[in-house]
Image (cartoon, one colour):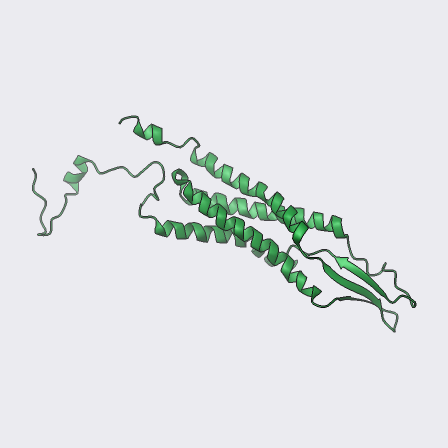
Length: 218
């Protein structure tokens, strides 16, 4: 029985486990960004020449809605990864604790940034940049159809970018926190386990009976 705690000890230290989770989630941003660039809807539009000779850019039908659909799709994919990763991290019982929450937050934020960078690069390579001034429109051909790449963020302000990258981390922290509320152990069932009360501890903190006195010694 003396060697039992050593047998129950995890193979990885807590620091290495947290680094593994953070690194894995960061690398997960690569396939997420590639998948998003493949399925994200582009924005179809036209460059038209007005009667006054001005070049005007417009979007066909409801194509302008893709400026919202595309970044929401990326955010949804990152949200799914956040929920799944937080649930799996909770199953790693030996390393439960705030360190794992920090690893999840760091990994998801870095993975989201990597997914956005890769997705934007692939989309730009596929669709290019719309050149309104260089569009081949003339008095004979007043309309030129264009395809614009989908955006990865809802806007270009630092607040919008930060909110997109931090929301998956907040989702993972929320899911992990809900799992914590369901735990019946003060140590969350992690390693090392909470030590059992010893006999000398019972003398210092005796068990109180219903009558208000200490339990009799046997």
